[in-house]
Image (tube, rainbow, N blue to C red; front, side):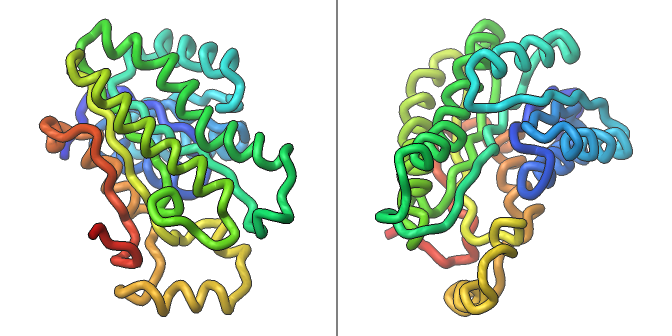
Length: 248
């Protein structure tokens, strides 16, 4: 899965799964624009990309802000000349029962997890259409496929990302632009580590592999969709859950 000379933009890539994606793309030969609301973690990822011998750019951006997103895309195009790969990874959640949530929480979850993907696709896809090539990978969640206790609003937003991926794939196919979706299950990130030990242990027991995913394992699946290996694949949703959920 070589990506020599490709230019990638990865949102939410300052830490966690997003950082792993940025580094995996760089290992495969891509230059990476690291886009994150946290400038410090974004710079850390960008430095790691450069240590792998690839070029990097840092964009501090709130994915929920359409104007900031448009500006960051202009910055990347000026710096790299093109965008071959867009990975919409940025996400946010807080686990709590739905009846304890409030509209401001709903708005934030929807804005970051769903509108963030809308904003970046709206800004990047015209460039890909003009070039008649491009790979878009949206990172949703298995919560959006099957639901998740305590993550009802988040699951709804990620379900929207899945449906958006399929519909956008139909629109973009005629222009040679691929759009696919990766749905991680429980993964070893800061969000999971914040959960009580008994919940983490219960998850591990429920997963056939008896462990949660490592961020780099999700990153490799994203790289498959970003690479020429998947040139005849679009509109697909792939779960990376260790068998916790399985398609019927």
